[in-house]
Each structure stands twice: as structure tokens, then as C-alpha cells.
Length: 257
Image (cartoon, rainbow, N blue to C red):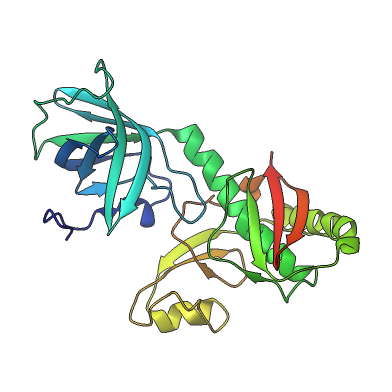
């Protein structure tokens, strides 16, 4: 529970990444410190910003209101939905929102699909990096969408390899997308999760936890809390737009289309 006694928000997208509507119970409605209207629910299908993936957008409708969700964040296991009420003025607090009301959540489908493709493509690119011989690169935590989506690694590569490796990465990605393969997520005991990920998990994952593991086709899995495509085919295409090495880090930028 948080400081206000609220229990952790149930993350419905954890179990069903393709669910775009759901029902929930409104726990609280308030103005955040920065003046944004905020709703807290007992459960949500909205993916909060994190792990390199932008948040979902959409709407939350109650018996006497319609709330437009513009941003979603998670803190101390509580999900906060930020936005504004229909027909409300900036900074205006809506008084007659009833705690305990049943609400309908609707996620913007186009945004969810795009973010899922971009996020899945980042994981696919990570597989391609291994397949083209850059095994010494160690992924940093998460994927990154700021300034264009990219995967970041600890380690450097010679600049004279950039052009040839860019072509190799795109060719490898094209092969994997053409082959396709089921994309799945599973919440597993630590030992089972470690086994599925090639025998080890990152240090930031507690050994008494049950990590959520993503697996693309037959490749080794990896821990991830994001949303993804149903099949590798659904990524459609992946292009490497830039490779950059600086201060001991290598960034591989990419696009999907």
C-alpha cells in the first residue's frame, strides 16, 4: 500500500497485452501537485511510461463523467492516470466524482499498436546484435524512445564497422521478421525465468521475485514489463537509422514501417 492506504494497482496488461477495454473501480480523484487531474483505479489496462515505452492514452468513463487520459505513470506500485475531464477548464477540480464508481477504460488502439511494434522491434534488434557478432555489448536496462527509438549498450564498437554492421543488422532483422514466431510473456518463478533467459537474469531482479519474461519465437527470453506484438511478423519491417558510440556506450537507432 502507498502512504494513503491504497493497494497496488492490478496491471491487467501484464496478462493480456491485447485487451483494449476493461472495467475497474475508481479509488480516488484529485489534482496532482503539478495541477493535473489524476485518477487512481483498482486495476488498469493502461501501460504506464517505463522501460523505454511511452504510456498509453485513451479515456476513462464513469456514470457522470468522461476523462481523457493523456499520461500514465507508476510509483510504488500505484498507477496514476493523468488527464482532464470532458468540458472542464484547466486546473478545475471536478467535485462530484464518486469513490467506488465503476468505470470503463478504453485504450487508444493505434497508439498501443505502434508502441508495441516499436518496443518489440527493440527486442528483436537486440537479438540481431548478438547474431551479427557484437556479443561483447551489454544492454543497459530498458529501451529508449526519446530522440527516436534506440537500444543502448555498455561497450564500444569501431566506427569503421558501422556501415557494414548496419546492413547486417537490417538483413538479420528482415530474415527473422519473414520467418515470424509467436511472441509470448509469462510470469515465472525466478529459477524458471532465469533458465528461459539463458541461465541468468540482470542483477536488478530480486531472486525472491517472479519476473515477467518476454520471448520472441525460439530466441532466449528476457525480462520485460511492456506490451508487444502477437507475432514477430507484426513488426513488419525494421531499419537501422544510425549507430553511435560515445563515452563507453553504443546506441543503435531504428525505425519501423
